[in-house]
Image (cartoon, rainbow over all chains, first blue to last red):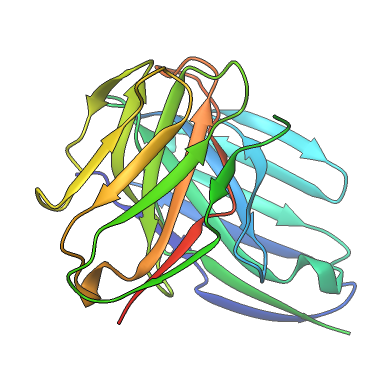
Length: 109
Length: 115
């Protein structure tokens, strides 16, 4: 099956710092989504990005489908950015999302 | 509704009991998905509905798990003879039409604890 690997597994930064999170996947996919899971467990949609680059405020994402990776950029980090960031890819055959193990981000004030 | 809702938010039960978890998708979304998330891991797919029918139930772990969506909107995940290993957060998601190129939106989850 499709393998999804995220790096780094853990990241601790000071408020105001920038970061790059990576997602590699092992096969062709329909699409890719980035989520933020807040400390209360809610999954918040960040980007729906099968290819190309998108930006939303301090966050941006780039997916290079031909090379099977995606990057999530967070600039000027705030404490509210803390949580786990998941990458999930949609399998071509049955549309289910296959998830990475996540990157746990801690932003210190 | 404005988003995907799930009830109850927490469920504690005893080993061997039967439980039902409910999901109310975003209004107008025809595709509905159930996932299960264990502590420290990403969610795992359980079942996918397109309308009233289960289009793919390959993720259900065994025949103790069953899900229905009789009117193509609300779905219920049913677990018989619960085991301690069933303890997890059960997540529901919906998307506009399913199929290719459809963004999934998630509910807050139901935390199931089997004692």
